[in-house]
Length: 98
Image (cartoon, rainbow, N blue to C red; front, top):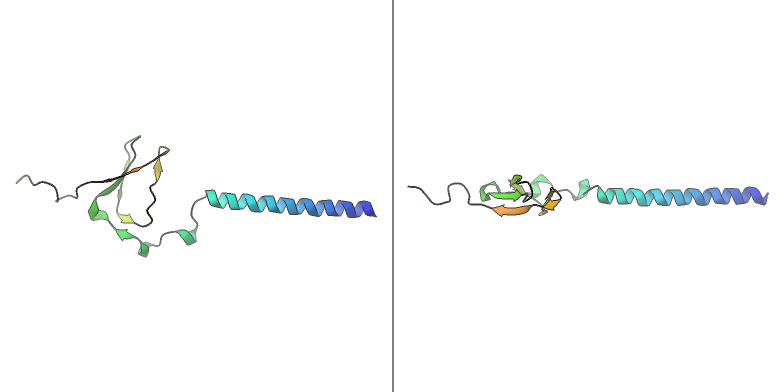
């Protein structure tokens, strides 16, 4: 009789440990997976900055992204390195040739 109770207790402890490990694993995967939908930037929260000529430039390979809408300020990575924010003169605002 005590043997059966001991086996049941061990099985329950093993199941509880497995559930705890699975819960921690899922929490870690969600943390690594990026921001959730509730933390995402809504389109109405972003600002139109196309006329400011802001670019994100990768110094490793030269890839450039023009920033047209600005929400959360978070500089992405490209080629494993953080991209640089570069502001150039907007077209039509530079020196005139006339």
